[in-house]
Image 1: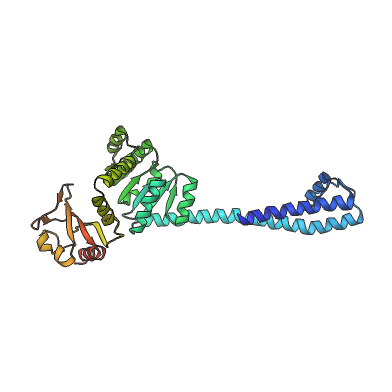
Image 2: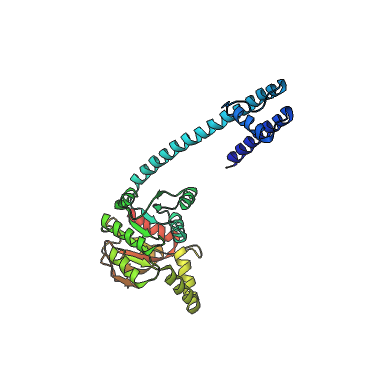
Length: 332
């Protein structure tokens, strides 16, 4: 931008210099002086509007050296910008395609408005892979500045979802501003991958929520309802709300609520009771919930509750201890 402004200022300066020169040396009007300067600088040469004296001819030669040289440099810069910009854009698309082809178990975020930006920030902070689909040029510029991967276009477009690797994705978040658009996104994504986990934003309209669920959304969230519910809880039970916030964020007290999936490789946990797993003894963690593969959840499980393959454990404890448990599950 700064370079463009300087180029414009230089061009104005040359045109002004030439016009004033002809006005002084040849007693020409400003229009005639500007005309002579333009045809001289651009080498068009339609014909002299001003009869040139020897001094005028010498001035014209100087103007040619200055003006024509500048115009040639300007044209070269414009050509380089266009060519390099096209090459850069083509290479950028090619590199993006290669990166997207390698993505697996990632998240597809549809929409980069206020909600989408927060979601992407949290995914980034937690080391999760994701790609954004956004059709706004302004938001795409912001995404590029932040260094996120993005595709430009309509998120309900099947080709774009395929390009985003939705068939290999772990989940999709639909947070565009329109309920109708989120419905189309959920329908398209569900058709492309029947077992994809889909979370969709709703305006709060009951009919919109029902349509989103029929379209294939696993969870439908209304930011307005969540905001109101949180504000009410801050009034009714502030201590509980503060504790949950601290546990979920993990930014204070070193505590965090985290969920871990029990895979077949976690031989120290599979088909063992909570007591036999020694999660509390070895890692000083509290198992708050055990969610079964069928969706059933066991809250406040007892020491004799059995841990099965495919269960999701919701644990509460220090971040380092959670990481240690996760590592032991991967490398028993």
